[in-house]
Image 1 (cartoon, one colour):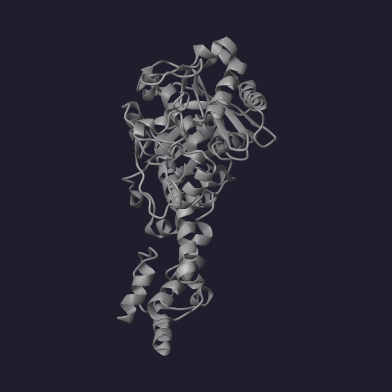
Image 2 (spheres, rainbow over the protein chains, first blue to last red):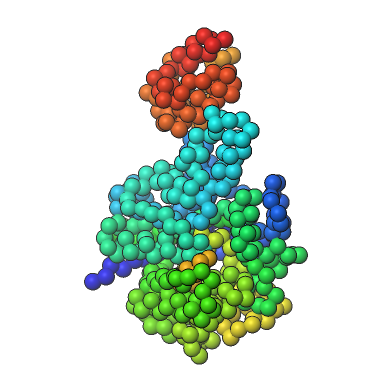
Amino acid sequence: MKNKVFVTGVGMVGPCGNTAGAFWDGLLSGRNYMTPLQLEGTVGEAPPFAGQVSGMEPEQVISKRLFKKCSRFSVMSILAAKDAMDDAGWDLGTMSRERIGIFVGNNSGGWESARNGLRVLHNEGAPFIDPNLASNWFPAAAQGHMSLAFGIKGYSKTVIADRSSGLLAIAYAARALRSGIIDAAIVGGAETPLDPWALSFYNSEGLLNLKADSPETAYRPFVAARSGIALAEGAAFLCLESERSLRKRESTGRVRASIQGFGFTNDGQESAPHQESVTQYARAIRLAIGHSEIQPEQIGYLSLDGAASSRQDGIECAAIQEVFGGSASDKWAGCPKTSFGNTIGAAGAFDVALSVLAMNHGQLPGLPYLAESAPDNDLNFVAGSSRRVSVESSLILSRGRGGVSSALVVKGEGL
Amino acid sequence: MVFDQVKAIIEDIGIEEEITEASRLYEDLALDSTELALVSTGLAKTFGIFIEGKALRAYSVGQVMEAIALKA
């Protein structure tokens, strides 16, 4: 029998708030959390707005000694992971840390550390480079720093797959739990792309909205006025547990949701023809549903990738139509990150975390900008700041550059 | 004066234990290889003295002060 995998905790650090509770309340307020982006040393055009994190209190969780070793995305990861563990009621002292894993989705690592290191190399010479650079600039650094922060020693992985990184990390963690390698995992994603280097990179890919004249127009997928994504920094983590782990700590165990099926496909070619991308995206969705215990009609909420380009939005909507046909309009569709920005490697983790909270609260985050722009497709978007709807299961979608498609089905559980 | 400067370099790493001249960097303060390299960089910047992080593993704070005095 397949081992079930449960979500027992949710934690977040992001533009809407530095705990999952604060983030959720902020998001549902309907406020837009993108703020003017002012960075020194940016090469070329820079996006005018981004979702930025302020007010973190790392000294509450991270020792001064470890903090010195960490890049910003590691700090956010540790704080969001602690928030998730507190939500789950984890007492690491009573759990086997060798049976807990860490899975992180990330795309660009600690760019600010790498950039500072190169600046020192150029200006002062190699002996003066911060030796912490050797272990804090790359995407797997957050996984290592989380291990140091919490003493977690189980099977762990970091996944780099553009905007699909977060979903893939969750899927790999669920697979490790199902196989019995570990009993529990802290899993999610972190990204800090608001750095001149990172912006140069994302700019060269043509992903960013460089033309927005207000936060409200910075990120608007699925409408004709779309013009690219707005970036955000942040981290979102979940506590996943097997039934065995829940049984062991039944006095404190609480279940928010269960991880169902996962699908992952590639287009298999650069700039694939539209229909081939639709076919592969649809295949990822079918795989996810096929590996789930639920039926397609039980999915009530679609959490979308929202690349905000006419090609990518068109592929996403067409894939959904291909899988669900006429019943697609019976499901609610949303893209909560339009209110705070796209966290790239963490985006899938934020989307899963918010979908879990939405199912638990019976309230779906909306797309406030739809009040002024009508969608150019047939999906049934949640308009306004939110809508009170009870949803049984959610389908969370992510795409990545190069034709990566991923889909995850999550079922809400009674708290 | 020199002691205070060396102490500040070590404290900047985040070491919260009491630091005396007798404190050994590895044995007593438990500095790891990265932290020893940070002390090496700090000594180079502050005193213009280069002691490899690996070598600092065997040093006490007092021995670091002696090395600085020899260089001066």
